Length: 135
Image 1 (cartoon, helix red, strand yellow):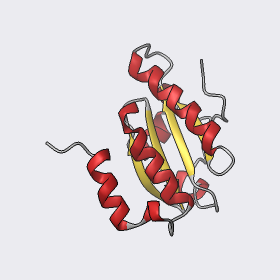
Image 2: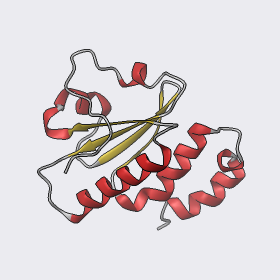
Image 3: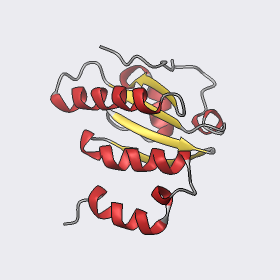
Image 4: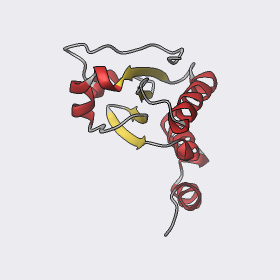
C-alpha cells in the first residue's frame, strides 16, 4: 500500500533543492512497491508514523523509485526504500534502513528548531553514539 502523504511524479522540472528551499523542511521517501521484504514494510510504517507526528511542520513527499529514474539519479539514490531530509535548500541527511529512526528524528528536530538543545553540538555528540554504530 502506498504512503498516505502526497506523491511526486516524474516531472520534468523537479528540483529537490528548489523544492526544499521553503520555510519548512522536506522529507522525500523513495519507495519500491515491487520489494515485498520486511525492510521495505518497516520503512513504509516508519514514514507513515513520522508523517502523523511531523506532517504539520514538515513537507512529506514520496516517489516510486523504479518510475523516477532521473530524480533518483540526480539525488544519488541507488536503491529503495530511502529517506532524504532537506532543509533550507540543502540536504541534511539520508537513510536507507528503518534502524535509522533515531537519526531521522534527530535530523527532523534539528531542521525544525536549529537552536534547540536537540540541535546543539553537545547533544548531537551524545546522540551520535546512539545513531551511528561504532565498529
